[in-house]
Image 1 (cartoon, rainbow, N blue to C red):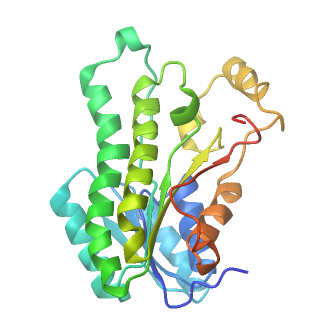
Image 2 (cartoon, rainbow, N blue to C red):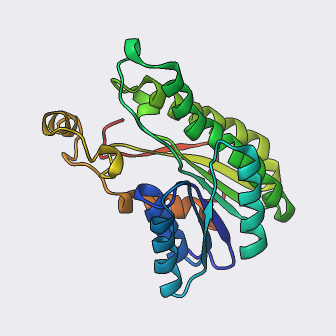
Length: 248
């Protein structure tokens, strides 16, 4: 069992999918949780309601992770209302499909801004809070696409690969402050991001997975929660896949 009592966590993109499952998992382990969202206020409020109904503490915090000022205000509000900031999960990301030759520069920038620049801005703001207590946990939600590449997703693959470099650099730099930084790379997970995938493509992707199925957000969240605990205190700079054996 993981005990995160008296810890405070911020999860970006936590109103749905993997972020939602992580927020609920952290709360179940005892952490107070700031549930970040951009547009889905109702979904974020629902996550907070589930946490508070179970006896936990949570707040919904609207912020665009690509906006440095908004990120700074989000971190400040989390610390002020929940009592500090010990855990950051950089989960916010977007996905779109386009062949490389047809990929628009604005789509490239948008995907990199949310996943990679957003992770940088949130990490930069959060570590200032963590350094005060000489303890912190940062988990970046990357993807197998960042390790293997993915057809029609050069921008997404590049952003997720960039998160792995950020993870290792931050892990080296922050280790002396008692802050660990790790990455989790999910494979194909049943979320809204793949909800519109056609059956033929879904079957082709499933055939590549040794366990012969897609994963669920609830199969990603426990690893993230554990990496945020004292038990994972000697693990930093690592990338762990949750993908049914897709990348091995």
